[in-house]
Image 1: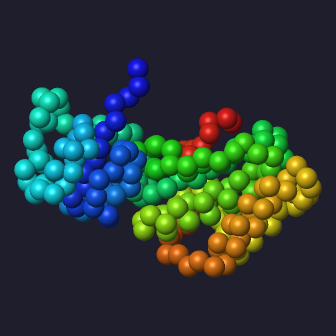
Image 2: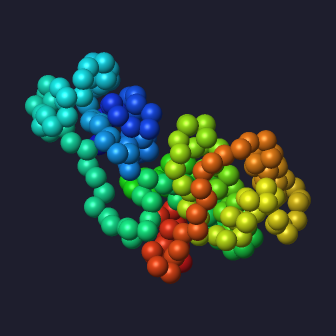
Length: 214
């Protein structure tokens, strides 16, 4: 049975509006002082609520259908050092080089925000591309939150705006190299204020975007 679609009204958050996924709602509200938001069963309810005062809805326990109106939260705990309203990225590779994929996960909700692959490549390339993918996505959405990566190499490559891979450019890697070139081009042509932070695995455990294949 498929999960019923929900709509999330954000009255007070980074970008107030109506969102159709819990992850997008979290991106707007987690860590935002005084955030006001609530879920609704239909788009019509959400639109009506967004046009009204949040005081008419915040704290109310039932919707017009009589069902509870609360948003499930993740109960997992992070170190106080971790900025929870953030994006974590990671890559995985079966062999190195081998079939590589990468993804981004919202730390607070632990929900996947983007995923790419598998494609033939290396883990370091995946880590580099994941950070740039995250930077571009956050800038596109107008969001200001840190990006965590557990790869010092990838963080250094991003700061240098150059993917310093030794992987040969050949027919089976051509598509990947074109993606690398687009990422490097984005870094040279765009400015950003997004902090890129090192995920301290020794102290905090595996990065939330880890694929769990170790």
